[in-house]
Image (cartoon, rainbow, N blue to C red; front, side, top):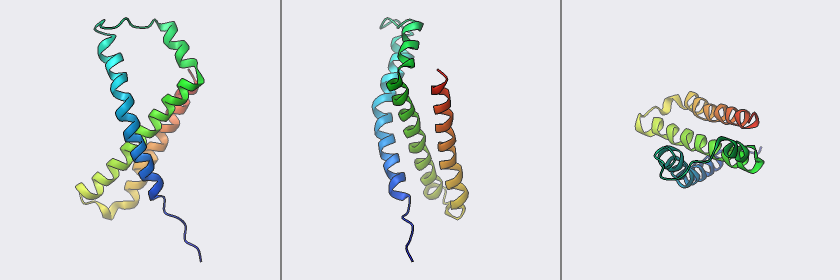
Length: 117
């Protein structure tokens, strides 16, 4: 009788890669679109230029990866916060379903939104 491999290594990989990608990309995007462009520190691109960038399949793929990895990073961190921080290990199954299910639903929504641009 063979055992199914546990999904834990995959979840830890998504957690660590999500943390790295978010730590590298989100601060840059927040600085540009939250500080530099609104305060005219840098000249903002016009709407047609941003739209043209968003129409590029590579840009969509990068944004999808950023959204998906960020969501799975959140799911894994929140799961273990509930397990260890709040000592809710007895609710393991609903926590796993809600955390990772929420990440999957968010990833599907991100894909749908990026495909409609």
